[in-house]
Amino acid sequence: LVDQELARVEKEKMQALWAEILNLKAEQISTDRSFFELGGHSLNAVVLTNKIRKTFEVTLPVTEVFVKQTIARLCKHLEALDKTAYTAIPQAPKQAYYPLSSAQERMYFINSLATESLAYNMPFLQKFEGRPDAARLEATLKRLVDRHEIFRTTFHWIDQQAKQKIAPSIDIAIEQIQATTTDLSIVFKNFVQPFDLQKGPLLRMALAQLPNGDYYLMFDMHHIISDGISQNVILQDFERLYQGNALSPLRLQYKDFTHWQQREKGQQLAVQKAFWLDLFANEPTALNLPLDHARPSQYTIAGEFYSFRVD
Image (tube, rainbow, N blue to C red; front, side, top):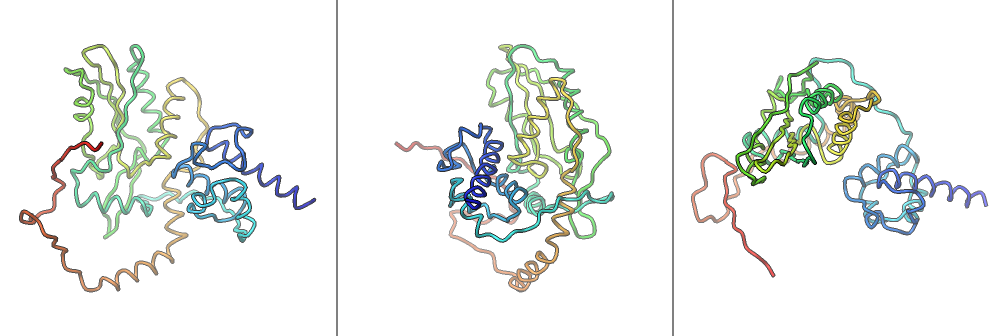
């Protein structure tokens, strides 16, 4: 009976996590329904594993969410896992420059190969019903930038290593665009431009008015300062700030995570780095696949489009 009661409590805890992540009520979640049938996807599966670690004090690989999928099977799987004490991420000591996270290092490296690329831009837009308050929008943007340090962050090559620097404040404004065409795709394409990671800011916003009277708020930022999960947080914060709501202060900023990650995983990363440096001690030759043209001496992102239909 005691085991049955513990199992029931564990399932209720898991239901509460799913309800929070999927924005559902606990009673809407059956223990035998798939996480993905209920609206889950890869991004909030990652959020789920992080919350499971904190709530149940076990480390669950995200692949297990895809394999087990239901609360019943996940809870059964958790019973066999060893407990791992959960420790909160501490605040990083104040520094002139901070390390990059592993994900940021990857993006920084790829961006350095093609600085004019738009591959890591994260643009989106919102149509307004009626005439928006431009001054209020700009004030909201400034409050958002003050709230999130990552929007005041730039990236630099210091002592043979990529570092990030956080400015105490930045000048940022919403560009006002009087479009000459009702073709929104053209207006949006002209708005999305490459970012300079050293200069920043790595986000920009514009309010476009089309000739037909429609208004669109256009937002773009570099992937090195945001991802699919944090994008939703940013949109929610922007909406609440625009509505005049007060937001609770943030205990942690992204630089706190990067400092923690590099410290916690430093030894493990050092072993992996040594492995790859040894494997590629002799630089591999370029892979020259058969082409119908000469390989350019300088790499570019230039290409062509070929469109076709499949029935």
